[in-house]
Image 1 (cartoon, rainbow, N blue to C red):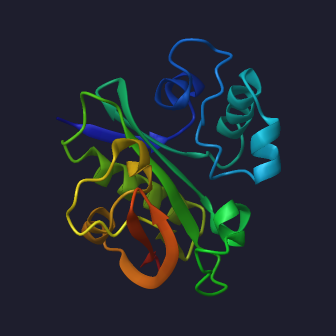
Image 2: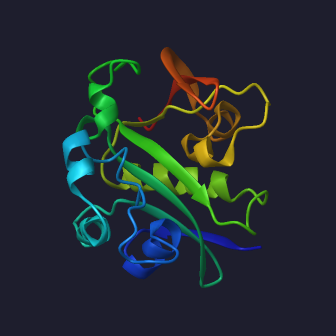
Length: 191
């Protein structure tokens, strides 16, 4: 296995990871639920969601990173400056300080490719993208599942163990719970 992580610049590959599987009009997340404000998220329906992501892919700063096994896209991580994300206005996830950190808010690996360490590659790729764009640090708000199984639907936030293995440390508790597990704010300094 030779995994390469690249900035998300190929819309078709982003669509493979995030888009609808059957109908292009289906109202799937497209990794926008944690990227845009609630009102925009509700207004973007059907094909408009994919069109919004296509715009993000073409922007100066890509919306995340993609993992490839050869030329096959196998994973995605959404990462962006925290200040522009809904998490910055959360009432259950505290803002630790005013550092302009970036946030990894979604990590996803395609079925058939899981259990091969691809999520670590994705987190490291997200950190590299943030560093390339001047971030002083990167945060995540994973579940603290203490080794218990996490429902795959909600596993997109990652686990404390995953982020610890990538050099992140806990900087704050939260009152947020996902899939029955508490979440913690973790950070990796890039200074």
